[in-house]
Length: 156
Image (cartoon, rainbow, N blue to C red; front, side, top):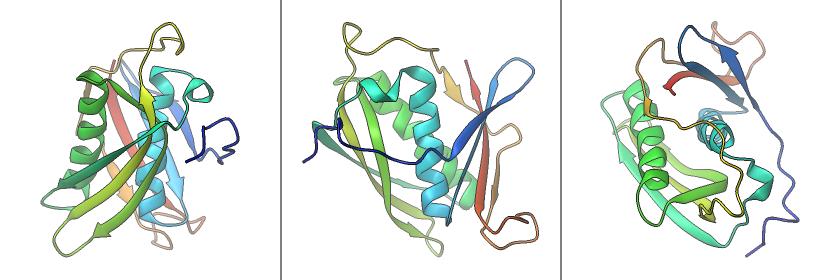
């Protein structure tokens, strides 16, 4: 497994102004990549991702009732893993399976235990919200650039 120092991944997310919270906007060639980038944008808001090494793997499995609830459950599980022992922070997240019929998702986070002596503390993410949550498929009318896009407001 790589240590993370040699990992050079493309960032496909940004932070948008929102009244009292922060809106994450992430995109990718497909919805799997957009979901993964959204998780990374949340982790990136909590610490400097470059300080995280890929020392362990964390499986993530969630289900939902539709694509929006699946996105919510996925990010909520990522936040739960960060907020409980062993306080996992990912340097990289890969969505391995995204089932549109059963609305299930399987992903793997690659990272390590969060350590304040090593990882700069960013802003605490208190919760994921459904407020203005959006998921636009690649090549859909809502996605003129041909990429998949997701928008999520997080409570900070």
